[in-house]
Length: 372
Ligand SMILES: O=C(O)CCC(=O)C(=O)O
Ligand SMILES: [Fe+2]
Image 1 (tube, rainbow, N blue to C red):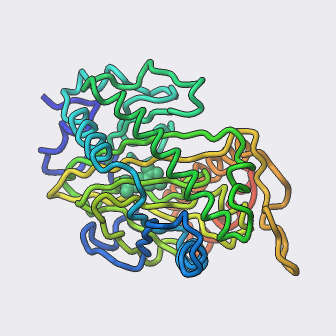
Image 2: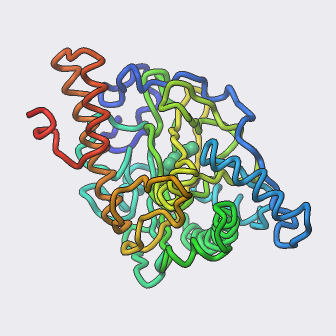
């Protein structure tokens, strides 16, 4: 029987359902397994010792450069126990292999915080992502809510808790390095973040009948400070640094974490460090698992450049809170998709649409106002 709820049950179908067919310009341009090695792989071995060629060299020449060019790098020798990482991934796979009814016990649709969902937590999206996911919010600890945090397989929840704690530790190390790469003190970024928050998206992308028409997770930037992404060896994470014209597929490296800079870090660095522009594509041969751990500042943290070089202007007009930044970005994203759909329905010339898209990114004006 075909279920209406999960993707796993659609895998056997020959044709992709309409709700997953993305606009032509959003379809994959590069294969999921055509790997590129342009994203630097950085070893954290010995990074805590301040030997002359050591920490400073890595920060300036490797981390700083990667952040300026892509907002993206991979780390190895990061000190996180590989057994823990493997257990975490295997337990996640076991969860996604459960029957629909069992996964749906944790259903988070309807705007709930945390749980299982197909596509994304964003409501009223125009096209669905070819993805199942479980979202959990491990930090702040006092806000932990276990209502829809899966307890099947039963070892998964405790494993996630330990994994999450390890991610917090690694994030702190990395934020120290990134802070220094910005020319600041080691603890400046963690200090301005306030009480650190963490959200985890455990993403499962089943084999897709027509992967060239679909997207696993559409193009976006992550909102927070950094994301630590664990991916299996299948491949599918792609990045662009020219607004989606050209894409590269990140080479999967066993036991490495992909480190993504988010919007918050982009603003803190006054745009010197990029917020990685990325997406996930799917394929017909393999299921794929990725675990994204988002490290976010507290809701009230201030979004504003930490230092502005002489002769430069701040890339953000006024200091706002992280909560406000998130709200504005979400608003812009959804307005932009609506605008694109409208342009298509009304056969608007491409140049006209581009002009409108450009403007829509700069304001929080609604679609109606823009069109008026
Ligand atoms: O699955 C991936 O490779 C990317 C996941 C991602 O970007 C996210 O969850 O924000
Ligand atoms: Fe992401």
